[in-house]
Length: 198
Image (cartoon, rainbow, N blue to C red; front, top):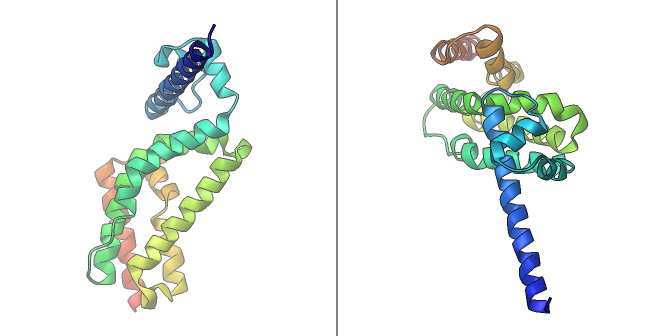
């Protein structure tokens, strides 16, 4: 085999490897999105239409798979979560923030639930969750503005009410519809906002 043929064979293996990895990540995203919290290698192989050995080879490096899944979710959801808030008073900005979070939380729910199952053995997932919490708090402070954010009790109550944990509880544990959960969150946020003004 010539040097050129060897290079072409190596390039072909790299392309196939990258394509198989893409298929595995997409299969995992689809399975988790359908409610499989910890899809097994057999399920992933069947969905990705690759061999079981190929899946095991890529599953050896779960951290990089978590990174790829997270990157895909961030690519889809960050434009919603990080878009500038409209001008207006604190209540209007807060209502917009709550509506955006409902959209983001609803889309990411199966992935977040699955990530929580694996978080104890993944440094990446632990750091990702801490980063998400910090981002959410910063966006809440931005929505409130510096004067309203100085009210520590209000800030902590709103940070909790607008968290993924509350959204998950309403949607999963209390079995509310999206519309019911959004309405209840809005009512609770208004109650905290009004109580702090008294």
